[in-house]
Image 1: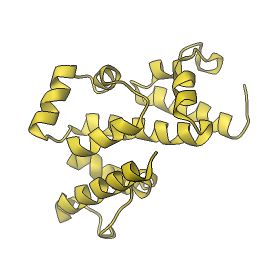
Image 2 (image 1 turned 90 degrees about the vertical axis):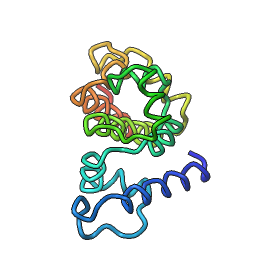
Image 3 (image 1 turned 30 degrees about the horizontal axis):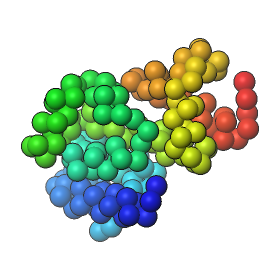
Image 4 (image 1 turned 60 degrees about the vertical axis):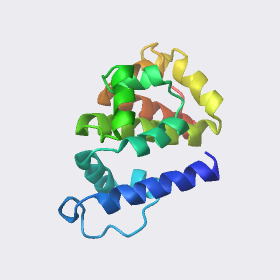
Length: 163
């Protein structure tokens, strides 16, 4: 991830929490929140899910993930046309969609830590994996349980544990 994108993500996350009503935020939220802090803090994540991820933040997250627009539409269970309407209206995503956006950001973050290269991560995501029932990892990401299996496999690879 480039420094420019990282800076934009940090600004968007900070703005999202600044625009969230005080009743929706836990009292310890600092004035500035980085994207990495956001992904590392379950309370931040819960707050964001309940408030809904704004399209502006989703757009930046989409840039740093290996997924196409069509794949994103499938993960979010909406049409590509609806995704375009979210953009045109600068809408917030619903809680279930917001949760999926964050899950895919988490998978991408761990995948980049493990493979250190987006192309290698894309290849791994699209290659059938014995440990995942001969399914390509990307096929499991539509469901939360599948995402947990993918995260588990990435963690095992990271620590050199091969099944």
